[in-house]
Image (tube, rainbow, N blue to C red):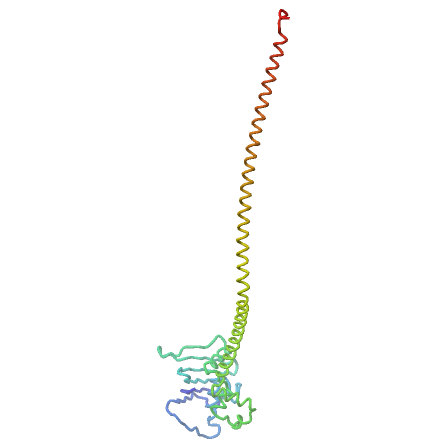
Length: 282
């Protein structure tokens, strides 16, 4: 992060507006009497970036003012940002986060819907840099020169990791480990599938023999089917022939009945004729 401009109004030692441009020098030494406002400059930076300083209440406001304001402009990874924080004695603080639009040559707001979300956005834009890491990496707070050395080894390691950007490598490591685990699981699944296929291929001779047997059995069944179909056709032919004969018999029975009726009629006529014979021929 490269500071560009810092403006303070009603903040700690600075009752009136004080502005400091960092573009006019590469190296500077800040000197002055106690209470002149040397540490206030660093407090203003941390207050703008993280909302924290050596004090974290309304005592940051100059005693002669009702509010304190810090405007901090800085560059990070090729983008220029501006943070505006206003601290009030009687109401919650205000926070604005902006990014410089090179095309329009103006600052565009990138604040979120709440202060908490805006704080998170600022920290994300700073690559996860927090107050503790910034103060240990950039300068020694007054009276806390040995703060870093007094920390536990794990805490120092964590701070150094954030300073050097090692957290990104931890993320990469976690992603790589997760990807490795997924690939190993996939490999195991594929290996199990290959073993299953190999086991299946080992049964190929038996399967081939079974298929041959099934084909032979199918041919035999097809022959049996043809024989049965022939017998069915023959049986059907016999049934049809029997039905024709049955019909002929019925027709003959009707003719016989007709002949019998005609015979009865003739016999009746003969009987009548016998009864009507004349006595002359007796």
